[in-house]
Image (cartoon, rainbow, N blue to C red; front, side, top):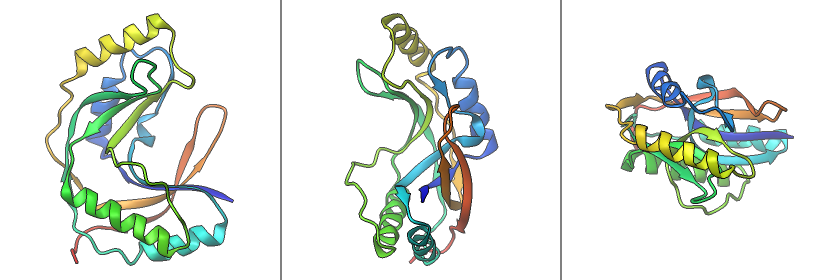
Length: 184
């Protein structure tokens, strides 16, 4: 079985800005910069053959490269934050690519969840939640860095990743990378 997802890697310059945004976060599980990515589809645990079939379908995708930009910080979980993330500005080309990736996964034999797409890059995870003082620190950090905005950065590839869970968090390894360039 392979635990897999499809995403867009973050360029080094943007990873440096995101790492700086994590400064002062002394609790939770901070995502290392080499693991920053924008998830297009989480495939879950799948037999190797299914991942291979999805890989072949992903290779058939024709989509244009795109410019993406960050637009502040946010949390999932509301009053009981579970995830700190950098918001990615909505983009039609990004949504179209996600739709094509999900279609390729279906063609490869998977049925994916139907969650609304909220483009983001995870910066930290908080497991079962935070102590009240930690939640206060987190909200202070967010208010100080709320204006984390970047100029556009180019997405020219997307990647099929394997995610191996470990005691220090997941480790991601690229299985295959696909170029963006031509549109349908």
